[in-house]
Image (tube, rainbow, N blue to C red; front, side):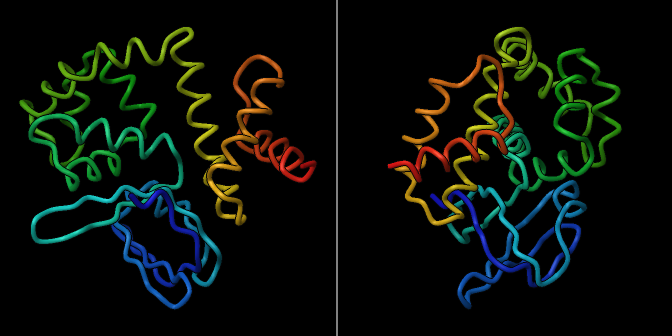
Length: 199
């Protein structure tokens, strides 16, 4: 499993980007939301990734946020929705808006996403509505946000050169002693760095 890529942005298009990592260029398929937030060519960039393996190919999909990747994986879990369609959906609607449409059972709004027909829209609502309602209300929302913030912080610490195990231990330590409520990734990174440097 390739968790993330960190390197120099070589090229960027609405559907893909190429990242140079120590002289090796990795092509990554991306949603439009990630494309719009990418830095200029030649700048450092970090993308969370999902590796899709088929009989005839291996394809990398990249996302700037843990929320995008999480939604991509949830969409892929639905029968009849593959990687390309999941990416297309995320290019047509932001994850938070998609959650709201699914929770509201708004099939008509989902159909307005390019490439999504009525049957697919209905299947998305049927298969994700209950889980979205559980995940993103009350404590479920806080838990999901906390997991997303931790994942982004972990990715950043690894990009800085820290081993995954060490980074996870530092994050666990600061989250145990931290204030209650969801912390932003930047706060977690700062506290984890202090924890790592104090050892």
